[in-house]
Length: 170
Image (cartoon, rainbow, N blue to C red; front, side, top):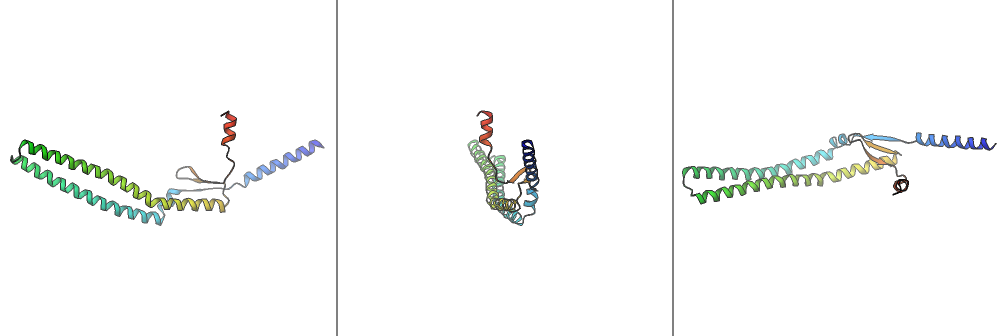
């Protein structure tokens, strides 16, 4: 009789474990595709492009000014109207201008990255909230991102860190 109760309890526990594992619901999404198809991302990309074009125009003006100064320098040098000191001064000025153009190019990259982050962050936050809400309301156990093979959502569960540390003796 005791063996019968143990067997019955074991069978009931096995059925419970199997049924709970069958009730797990997994989903997936390609976040890259979602962002590519997003009208908000397209709008942000348009703003970034417009901002980039204004920065590029300023850079092009700097380069055009540099080229004019360089042509004048070469013409004056070749005509022999510049002393050695004037040649050195003009070359130093040209090098300084060239360095400022390079510095501006780096600033442009930084400004574009900051603008991209500024415009994309609210979109990415909105997507995260939507995925979390879908995960909770749809009772998904986990939602995976197929574009990165990453986990986007997981139901809250027991944090096993302390138990694993204890097992390892840490």
